[in-house]
Image (cartoon, helix red, strand yellow):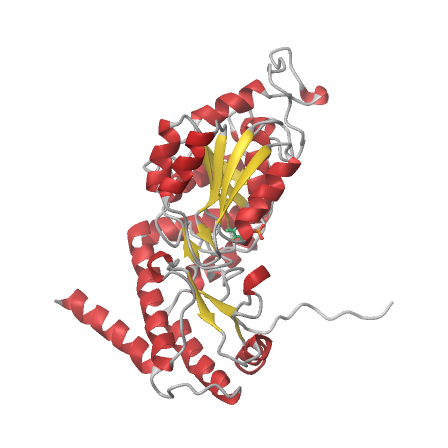
Length: 414
Ligand SMILES: *Cc1c(COP(=O)(O)O)cnc(C)c1O
């Protein structure tokens, strides 16, 4: 057998919409030794994680816990549990991830209706209401921050509409949770799903989920406990069972409850990581964290515009944690990304589908959302654009961003 080298990754500045840099505290927590999954010390950590997760989701939902999977798996878990075959679901899609919801729901056997919007825009809540008037639905499933286009769908009004029509509202907040406001209870979201490698700033590999009592009731009616661990009290519910064992909300609930049903083996080190990432958020406070992302977003946008680049999409609905720039005419986006990575160690992202080759996306998420990163990125991007033949206004970008930071500091002093 040939020899393999020990892992020794190059240092990178991760300015993509995920994965982003993890706080060193999170990485340290991951190297702590393993506890058994039913060790009281470990179950106490699980309980603390649930409590901190409720703070981050701004919810009182009892069912607020982790699933050992990526965000996509979190979406699949909640959708598979809450939506029964044949249920009608309305999906207002305005980018790649909206279509992902449709794809997962089709596999759940849902009867889906897609509302489609041009990439780079969001829905007027009235459009959702008009669709709900026409037909009766069990649920609306939509994306909060559509990472593929950098657009953010306002949800408060849609939440009120869904409540009025007695429809569940299931939301993907994978890209936004922990970076900008996501108010599960206030916005009347029936369920909300997120991940770890974006604004939560831990490695990928865990999904944060929360859902209300209405969904809890559906899950209860679909509950089946495995034969090998079933007790006399575990009578099957009256609805069709959940067609997944691993992503089974019913058994997962019991695993995270005092019953501690023996389901899967919790991913110990990932649990440590999320616990520490959430502790970082609680210490910083949501308010300060959102303000930090917003300030860095303003500096980034000002810098890009001062350079002469244009921002993609409806600016009024741009996510504060992702910015997409239009690739200038005749420029190869791949060459820009490549040079950013190879010469500067900075990773930015391309896009998908109709926007592939048209925009580049810059993340401003979690631990990566730092003044230093924004300034270095702007300086590097200016040089890379110039070397690729783009006529940028040199010397302006970093300066414009520094103005934003200085003005914000002055305002704070005043
Ligand atoms: C990143 C992302 C996902 C997928 O997340 P994974 O952790 O890669 O499974 C889903 N939805 C949105 C909006 C995302 O930004």
